[in-house]
Length: 157
Image 1 (cartoon, one colour):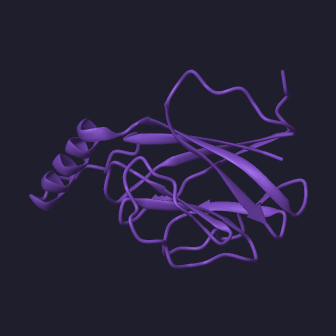
Image 2: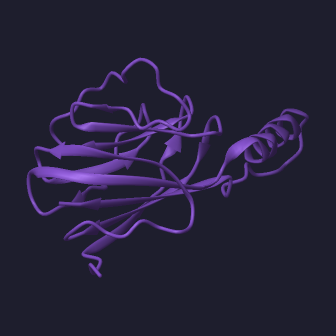
């Protein structure tokens, strides 16, 4: 069994039902066409992760492994892709906001395997978000739910 090398939790804001995993220096800022819910489109230096819920804050726990980790039993596997990191540093953040200095050091510039798992989400989570938006719009003093969905991202070289 491969042992975990390092781990970090990011809290990206999902915008336009997307957030991204990107290289520090070298990435394409325009998402490819045809982004779907259970699809991980890859552009130059960036992976776009599609959410089942519109605008909200989520958590993404990134695990970096020295080799290919076993597949996880929990969560929905959204896909497995390859990401080339020119800088050897990646971040997870919103479509329009930057990482604000929150970078994860990898094992240097290389191509990395990447699997993304979603926990939660779906129509029930979207309904909870919509209900909170309605209640806030009606003047209620409530917080937006922050537990609508979460993500686990496994990376390896």
